[in-house]
View 1 (tube, rainbow, N blue to C red):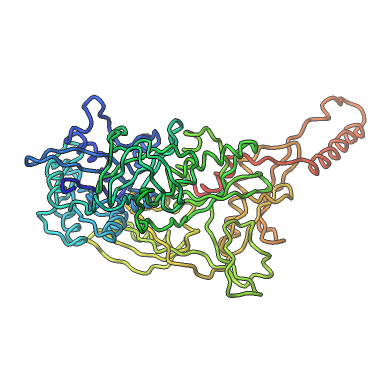
View 2 (view 1 turned 45 degrees about the vertical axis):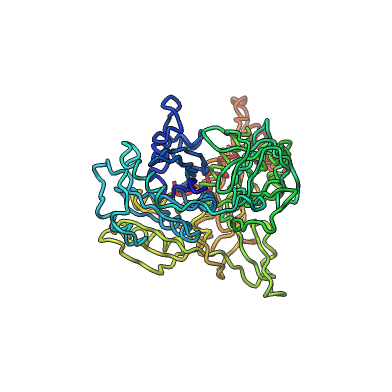
Length: 598
């Protein structure tokens, strides 16, 4: 065990984690030159197309150093704030972390957030200055930022470049010298923690775990602690580029187990695996339950696909345990699921993965957050409202509280004014402003989570020319003056477009949604009014004009009463059509509401 090292790579998005991981794989000959490709560990098409890491990827490397053979278990983690749950799980399976900072951009918000996660778990931090080959690199300046942040010595920072391979040998040496070997007892009862799982259509569920104590052997009977069910370990092994079967996986190591489990709800990330004949006394303390930030409804386009969508979501949850969902129904869209996501990017990725991996075409409703509603008859007990259509009758409501977050924005000083304007427009309150260097500022705001759900991140990048980095965490609920805004099409309420909004924003938002829907809903044979309403009061209206057939074309000459008679007949037909006509809302209309500012 003294020759095993478990470590992960943490950094802000786009600081070169995956590229550096590629160089480490090459330096340890884990991957042959022929198999080598950029982002070698990212196995999803989506990750390659967008150039981001969505899933954590574990891989084992063998390295011969100073006359000894070492086993290095590396976990490459995502950098985006929406996937921080992946990072927290990877950190729980490691003893050390490589903190990578881009030498041309310096420390950004997510770097700090991931670093705190690692420090909470007492990991050994190895700071690395990446992208040293760029002409715009500022090694001295960024090194000072790192020293201020983690209090290390200047000589402990390793200069590196993922592109040229500079510093890779130094990184491997630092991993062996500075990261402690895992602690554990091979003689103790088996105790292993599941940190990830995937669904394989041929072999069932494959669970990835880190062995804390004991040994897990092929063919032995194992028990999953939380569910209390017993299974046969049909195959155990370690994670190379492919799964590599072994006879046993010992304490301190990271491996996988295949036991023919088919039901998705039987494997829970954070669960403990132990032996049936000699179980351990207590489960390993897993991860805290994930707290979704954004809620949206996901519905199948065709209601017959509801069961298939449920299976797809369960399989996806195995691979992404931060997805939370429960069944719900909507008058406009039929049966579907109310899903909780960690952010807008997370929601977009889930939708794309459902379409690509499971061929499910889905409709997503307007995202919102969960509110606490207090009634006049019981002002102490909060009713949790995840969906605007669940809001009780406003006449009996005492107050509504909405979730607030603490947002940290790190940016260049020239953009401070425009970022403050944006945050104040989003009902934010400035709480702190610190100059990290002469031209880098950290601004801290408290603002409602509902305001960042839609387009905050995109607009922040726009006003700061892409320089600002953003991170947030929840701080609790505060009372707000919120109203429920409904949208009526042809006098019928579309519950999927209802939203809880602040009273001051309601008129402006209602007007903009009505204008957007007028552009997107196709014209019918009858006139369609689009209205935004608060209770019984209409606050905005747009009208989609009717398509008119020229019924008087066949009249040439003759008395005017003939034309009038035909027009009256048409008018009566349109009136009847409007009473029975149903307006279909296209999928683009639901999505366009999210992009009102484009």
